[in-house]
Image (cartoon, rainbow, N blue to C red; front, side, top):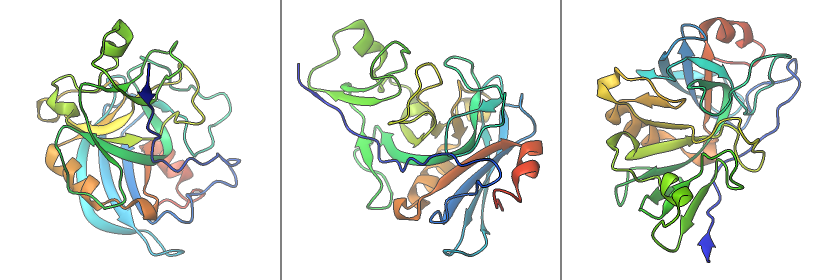
Length: 244
């Protein structure tokens, strides 16, 4: 059975010791999400840019978002994780906190407004994303050359007729090639449900207008980064991590 596995367009880094960590110097675009606390499902999002080696400057793009039903928990990204900290697991309905690279975009439309270099896949019934912790393709994307036939293939279909997932941008939590089974999968920015009155399973959601604007603004060559933290942790790491 022939299958086409498409690699995620993500720059994967390795976490440095806590005292030495800071945002990658080549990153000049930054989305910051600050939640009231670890158990909050609401988040304030802001967009920053900088010249190489310069300070972060607010762009004036500020908007509301929603998070997991149960709030946040430390995820697996670029950041160091405090010793003994609770970590994200599959199905915990918490958004991964930390510092994350961004990947490509997926959607139902034939084309979207985006930077030429940003990967975009028009999702069909043959596009799959695996959330089964026992699958060798856990937290990976796969396009198959036939209509889904098995239970596993049907369960992994990205196109489910759900408008909330008609446009999405990958957040590189627990991402290839450093995937840990059971540590959480399928984390995206996508469109919120019920006008922002619904929580998520771990993704960060926002209005369709704001998501389209975000995707149209980011440029892969500028290595856009997503920082998501509760308010107290943001204040704690702000200076050391050189956050805005």
